[in-house]
Length: 391
Ligand SMILES: C[S@@+](CC[C@H](N)C(=O)[O-])C[C@H]1O[C@@H](n2cnc3c(N)ncnc32)[C@H](O)[C@@H]1O
Image 1 (spheres, rainbow, N blue to C red):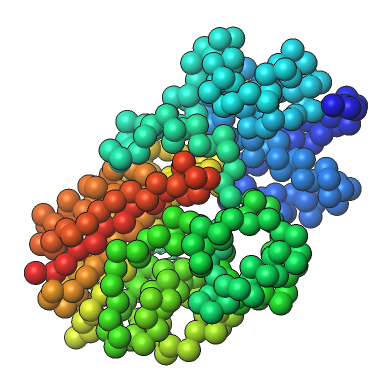
Image 2: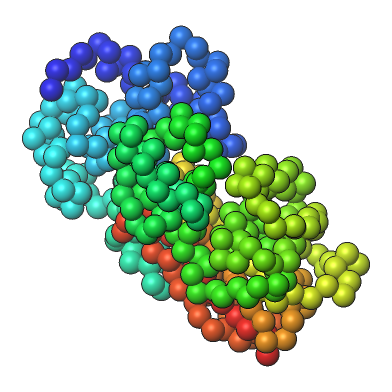
């Protein structure tokens, strides 16, 4: 590999400046957009490399915090990439190992610096029981793929357009396609509205839910409507109420529904479900309620690895309290014999199994099925879903 060490050093300086400026106040992707606006002298390949170095650096979590930033960057690049100019310049004797498998690389680093995996994700004691700890931790070294859900009837158009534009993809099911991360689909204007970007795990979240025609559903943490769109894909002839605590986010839902050409009439409400909502919901009753709860997002940190450094365990309690409040405040609006679906993109038991326990013990719903949707072994997010029936 040809390496221009002057250029590599310049890129390492860019990286150091970027992570020094980042204060963990907003998602790193949003910070980067602004950072590049403020640093227009950086060309597109410099930006690409800078983003890669920063993201890989975050993938180490809190491991090796006694080492210099440059040493940590070298370890991160070595673990996350097969080919790294930063490693070539700074750790040339590691290069012969850089194409080995991840387990060999971990052994190689541990032989020099000691065990470190528990510092990458220092919360393993809090994981849901079905999450395999080591595989889950190691999955953070790999950037997840991009997944799209193709609108029914558009499968062949989307696939043909991707092929014509030589965009590689894997067909996981007729509606679920997996693409390399970073694929720019926005350039394919002719496909606007024919697909949704939605992680594989999210696409599985309503698999075990049946939706009858003319039934009434409430998506009570709807955000921009990912789960509602899945629901409508199952059955478009439903009565749908979407609600969220934030108005701005429901505007995104309108836009997304519009783009997806949703024909179903739907109602919208702004509801803070941390408090009782009887004065607004009155006599409303539903055949199905989807609670896609606000959560730590710990099943998705492969996409936002800065969270490995930022997250504090005390936040889990706050989420768990809010999750209990939300399910408590929505359960009265479910008709007898009907379905409540509880979903998180968390891998923590306190946000998953502990909440299902609360729903059965304290709210009296019957648990029909609960499962972790394991995505960490397939370059996807991991989620949790539980289905209940009201007696
Ligand atoms: C995981 S997101 C929902 C994602 C969405 N269902 C989708 O598939 O695109 C959780 C949502 O809960 C909302 N939320 C947070 N606190 C809430 C509260 N107190 N009451 C109601 N919704 C709340 C957030 O605004 C956020 O949009």
